[in-house]
Amino acid sequence: MPKLLVFQHVAHEILGTLDPLIRDSGCRIRYVNFGRKNFDIPELKNYDGLIVLGGHMNVDQVDEYPYLAPELKAIKEAITLDIPILGICLGSQLLAKALGAEITKNECKEIGWYDVIATEEGRKDPLFSKFKDVEKLFQWHGDTFSIPDGAVRLASSEKCGNQAFRYGEKIYGLQFHLEVDEAMIQRWLVAPTNQKELEELVGIIDPDQIRNETPEYIDELMSLSDKTFGEFINLFERKEKTHVLPSI
Image (cartoon, rainbow, N blue to C red):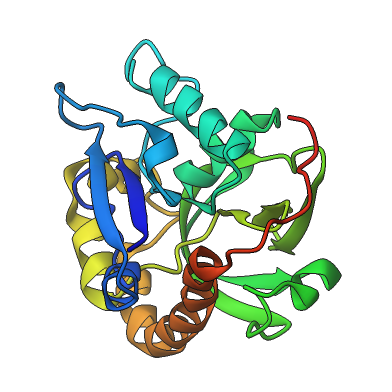
């Protein structure tokens, strides 16, 4: 039975639609909750995959969130073990940083529903094969990653050029949130940290617009989520050795 490790940063950013897919596949899940002072990162070699979830913090805020340093070290170890890895939002930025890429402020904050465009490489990718050329996806981020050396860009948006990447055959970083359902989005809009951020963006980001648009787009996103994450879970079942990854 495959064992999956999940790095979680804040209580409201959870596996979401990924959770039932993983459990139905027979995988066992263990969480490392970095919001707790007594977190413990287990031996990565004992796990068959890693998922790194989102959070409001910046990858370089090590003084305020000291767990970011050992977490980054663990992600680097997971990369060398050549296990499937999925980074979502902050998780994608941590993954990109572990691969030597630069993390910077995006030209604007993307919060809400945005068009995401698959690249030519994305249209050929197993996980992204079900994407239309343009998908309306949910976002909540202010930072962005550069594409790591040796990786391929899979998607972009008008205001954020790098929305997704693949490194090797089993390592993926997604800036957008495919894991959300309607209830998660509603919880995010009232989470204290998120509310404070939205208060600073009055006149730029409208929470009511997000609430109104969510019923229009959520069903198609969840359908795409099942197909995309289903392909990621299939990576755990591939026993054959893949090619050697480029050096980090």
